[in-house]
Length: 204
Image (cartoon, rainbow, N blue to C red; front, side, top):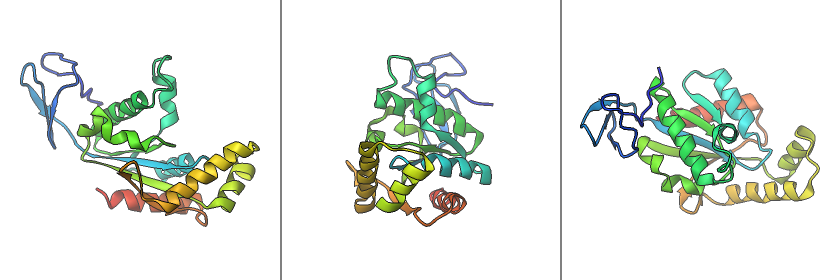
């Protein structure tokens, strides 16, 4: 059963201003308290074409320890006027995750960018931690994956992805949001998924 965290089971209060601890949520209107599983949220990021979605999808096939999701799905369920509002998308991702993880499994999302928005999201308080892993591949391999793997011929798109990949390789944070990196240039997708699994399990 998925618990709708934002709705008090006692009085029906759906305002978001609940008090959250490691294992309880309290309604500010009626003081009713109910159980809550506060787990980590995992984000897999990286340049377009590096293999984020494929790696996360493969992890779901290989492991039952996580609920694996693709952030693009949010475009189809968000209001039509907000698909370009990345903070709204971030809040939707967190709201979805906080409910889903009541099954006892943390969520792993594939998300291309805007990780700098994570600390400013209201939903941050519903997680025991938010951890980001950036997949990198290097220029030559990324160009190969984009052209041969995905059939992309747009040179500007490819160059933007190469530059983004280089940023992840040369830095350890974006606007104060720190991330770990995983070089997948010589890994099969199964190997990359296993490394992702080891990384995430190490954060639990």
